[in-house]
Amino acid sequence: MPESKSRPQAEAKRRQKRHEQVEHIRQEKSQKGLPNERRWVPPLFISVALLGVIWIVVWNVAAQYLPFMLSLGAWNMLIGMGLIALSFVLMTFWK
Image (tube, rainbow, N blue to C red; front, side):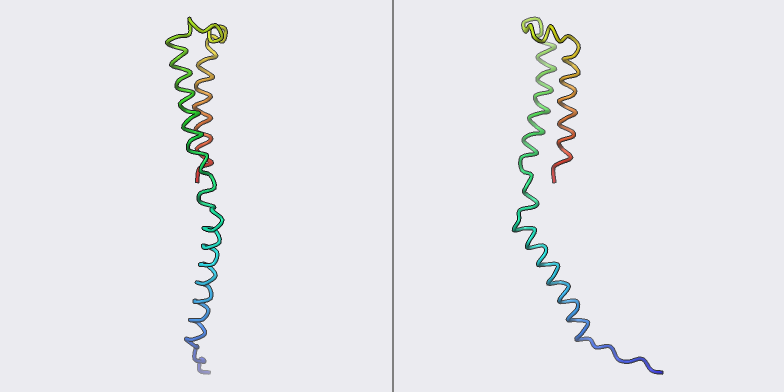
């Protein structure tokens, strides 16, 4: 039995409808601001990383002048490295 002819207009309409649906979804996402909704992440993780580096530098340079750092002792290194590790965790929230 011969195969029936396919209708090019019907296939073109299906492709056009699918394209319109995809475009509609893209427009909704851009209007909601999804790509820009996490603008707070880069300043936060940079600040936390710098705070960790500054903590370690101050501990190594001026710990004898700061009594609270003297009382912490070697825990200062853990605090500084913890802040730097936290900044890496915060980086994962950035889109």
